[in-house]
Image (cartoon, rainbow, N blue to C red; front, side, top):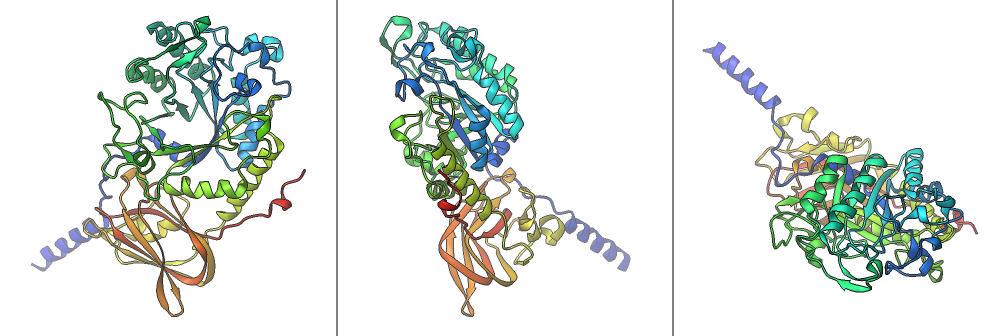
Length: 499
């Protein structure tokens, strides 16, 4: 009898130690979406005929001869983005005017018919090489709308022009991390001299399933951005901000089945916040131009967003589980303006210094519950390692646990960072953070959705040696992967910006 009991005891102990990982909750990201999430910040580069005509949207009748960036330097442009802490760039290879920055075979309205390098230039290739040299990711946007093409509005445009342009771009310029599509489709244009308005049914004209299949085949590692996905959605504004509550899950409003830029639309609040019960994992991208406009305009010199502006946007985009996409506008010479570059440089320095040191490192973490009592696999120590997907998990029935953080000495902070292991879905709905002040616990912050990233910027600095995390609402057990305390650093602009 004692032998049976002993065997049973060993069996139960083994089961406890072999506790399974929590089941995923709701939709979960694909590998391409995970890589996109980890990128956090990238830049969208607008350059073309509009740079020389002082327009935002070209009509399509521009002469390629006006495009002549005599000092074009992809290393300077990509380098400015890298100095700002951005991890990649998206090149606008073709905007709505139809002018292509690469020597495409699909239209004569391209860089080979400009004076640049005597018609032998290829801006896409130069961006590719600069990204490779600087360790930056490359993305590409090719506008579906083409105000220059005589075929736009006809089926032949999609099959013989647009899809072939995508095939060229995604075959000849190496791996990309994102392919970008937007909702500007159809309207007035030059259209080969017709000078008329052409309207299309954006939900059907481009045959998105077939068009996207080109991307999936040629660039399987790339996320696809569109108004409502399929991989990344537009946040619903061009302010660079997501909602205080921000869900990566979303259900498109679609008149037909599927998820496509033309198959649905983004309602402002829904794009900003997402849907808690969304059917698909479609996180938000927050796009915003560094200057007032997306393209370069001389009268906007000196009007770029400051480092403080960018840091505030970082908290409201990356800090709310989205990614931040900042528009850069090279000037007519093909360079980023010095003022713009210095704003990026200062922002990058502030960001790196702020998040260089997690003040919670070395703390003792005490959790109210650990899944299966397995500290090695599910213990809170994983919150302080450098693995974005190792995590503290609780037993299935424990959805409102607490965690005490003892730093053993006073630390001063004003930024709190939290992340979930989103491979298991977005789980936590509400939480609170307390600090031990004046001999008692005092609540210093609350927040809602966590997801891939949540930054809480406090109104004032807190100095304490103990912090407590309370999960106050979650439909399932937690899978929290990161906890950090940071002190915001802002370098005085005069110390880094030089005339």
